[in-house]
Structure formats: structure tokens, C-alpha cells
Amino acid sequence: MTDKVIEKFAAHRELGPLLLLIILGALFYVMNPAFLSVLNLSNMLGFIPEIGIIALGMTLLLTGGEFDLSVGALFGFTPVLMFILRNEGIMSIELAFFVVMAIAALIGFTNGILVTKVGISSFLVTIGMQLVVRGSGLYISNGFPQSSWQTRSPIKTALAYKIGFPDSFFQIVVSLFWFLALVAVGYYVLNHTRFGNWIMATGGNEDAARARGIKTDRVKIILFVITAVLAGFAGVIDAFRIRSAYPVSGTGYELEVIAMTVIGGTSLFGGRGTILGTVLGVLLLRTIRNGIVVVGVPGLAYNIFVGLTILAMMGIHAYLEKQSGGVS
Image (cartoon, rainbow, N blue to C red; front, top):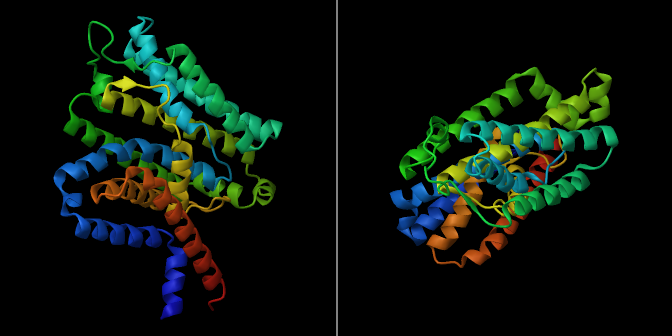
């Protein structure tokens, strides 16, 4: 019986974070019933889509054997540039949106080329790109936030409303729609398409994948582009939600989203990824962030809880893999 339980948990890595999410949710509720109040849950849901969208891209990239430390900088830079282009009268908000998405894609493409063709590690490439992108955002904005209300007429366009701009409840619903839609797409791509198989094969054993005819460099470049575009899109959604764009927004997000994906069951070394696990990882860390504040723990202790959670989940994953390997 024990062996079967271990095998099940090892085969379905999402079960660990799901169990921990339930336990922590129940614990926070017992300590303060306000944790499950409508107001508190809506506050939690308001922050999940943006960070979750970045985590989806990181899941695919990690599964392919790489990672991107520039996503947090892209999260802040993209909406800043978009609002500057619109507020300076250079172009409409709709055109600015597509321009900044194209720039995000170009940044991701550059990361991919430097990693695959030049042979620089993704750590060095993306941390360098992080500095370039963050510095660019600070330079073009002079370090000041860019608001959607800086001009005489506020942004009230079809694009803004579709992405989720004006009213808090409506915005949460639309943002969640984008997140859930991207979850469905990511899950389908990773688990039910040939490209998903290529991603796992590339991350699992790149030489073997290349020997089988998979164009691993192309796969990685596409994944870098997807990750960058999703990070930029998440930043735009956040900017529409708070009606401002800050050049320092997203600081530290790169490590947080990697933690979410790893906690959810995606391998840090490539070859194995789970979109559903990432969703649970996002919910788990956001639950911890919110819950420790609701029950009266200082918010500055958040990183302690996150670190302990990462260590615990990594230990559990390692134990389950070791035990399942010896189960007949």
C-alpha cells in the first residue's frame, strides 16, 4: 500500500503541492477565519494572474532545459514603454501594445540566439539582459512611473477593456480569464502536441533529441520568445489594473516564478514539466504571502516561509523519486 502511494505521488508531482496548499489553507483559516472571506480571496485573486502568466512561460522554458532571469525586468519595462509611446502622442495605445509585444519577442529571440548559437549559459545571458532591460526602463522614464491618466483623455479603448482595465471586479475576472486560457493552452501544448514532446526531449537529453532529428536550438529559441512575450503581457495586464507602470515593477519576480514552477513539480534540470503543478505552485506561494499577513506574521518573514517551502518540496520530490525507483 505504501509503495503504491509513493508511486502515485512520484508519478503525479502535483499531489504534493496540492496537499500542502490544502493544509496551509486550513491552518490559516483556523488561525483567522477572515482568510476565506470574499474580500481577502478577491485580493488574492487580483495578484495571481500576472505572476502566474510569467510562471507558465518559465515552466515551458525550464522543461526545455533553460531559464530566464530577465522576466521580472520585462514585466516592468514593457508597460512603461507602452505608456510612454501613448502619452507622448507617438502612437495609439493599441499600436503601442503590439509594438512592445514585438520588442519583448525580440528580446526573447536575442536571449535564445545567444544561448544556442553563441553558446553562453542562460544564466549569464539573461542576467545581463535583465540589467539592460531594467536600465532601459529607468532611462526612458527617468525613473518615474508612467500613468494611463497623464494625458487629457484617459485610456478607455476596446483593447484596454478586453485586457482588463477599469473596474476592480471586472478586471479580476478578465485577468483570470487570460490566465486560465493560457493555462489551457500551455497544458495542451506540453502534453498533447509534438512540440511538447520536443520540449521534454530537448530538456531531458539534448544530444539524444538532436540525434532523433529534433531541432533543439529552434525549440529553445521559441521557448525564450514565448517566455519573454508572456512576461511582457503580464506586465501590461498589471499596468492596466493599477493604471500605472513602474520601471522597477517585477523586481525579484524571476526567482519567485522559478520557485513556483519547481515547487509545482517542474524539474530545474529540464525534461519534466507540469503546467497544473505550476498553477498549484502559484496558488501555494500566494496563499503563503497572503496568509502570513492575515494571521499576524510580519510580511517581511515571507521569504523565510518561501525558502522553507522550497526546501521541503524539493526534499519530498527527491525522496519520492528515490523510493519509486526502488519499488518493483
